[in-house]
Length: 260
Image: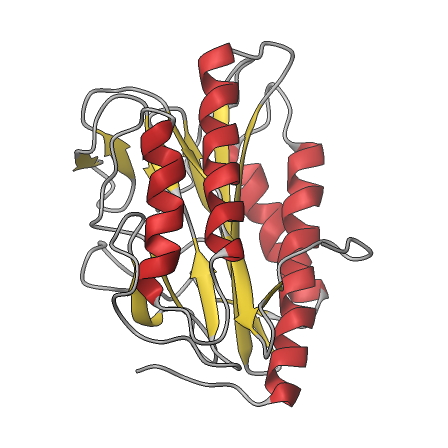
């Protein structure tokens, strides 16, 4: 289903998006050497409840996971990249951590992900990988607007990732979002311009460039959820929810008080 939201629902989605972004920034500030992934999950649960919102993950049971997910946030470390199931692991200096969060409030969902390095050690290759996903995300947003097509976004994202030297997996990518977390259309992280669904004002999309350093092949962890690089290489992931407007695209998952 492709859902076109009313202006009132888009405004509510922006509030939800700010909540998602604020939670992610709080978690980033609290994530230090020695922090357990289960602590991050507990903090997320408490902040969602305090905001009067609902988790999009805890009861989520899609065909590609061993559901229900049972946790409130995806926590992916180093070679894990997507759907990271929180578990009893304490973060170490130099770990590359991705936090992916989707929340619903007032009937509208928003989805965002950030990658960052924990502690004082900053491996240059990890810094470069995170930067590439963030630049690809910016390029995808810049390509979005009324009359553009999904392929224009995919092409913009893929061009940045490919120029940075990363293989691109197309099994998982961005997606429509609205009253539910995952909707059509699928937004692959590479594609041909001028192809696919034509964007309309009121359409919400979650764009999410993600890469693995030296492979495009994923393997599923024993937990049935966490997706890792097949070679054990590091990974990174960046995501924003955007709304197509009459003259472009608005980023909905910005922290409170931050403007594009």
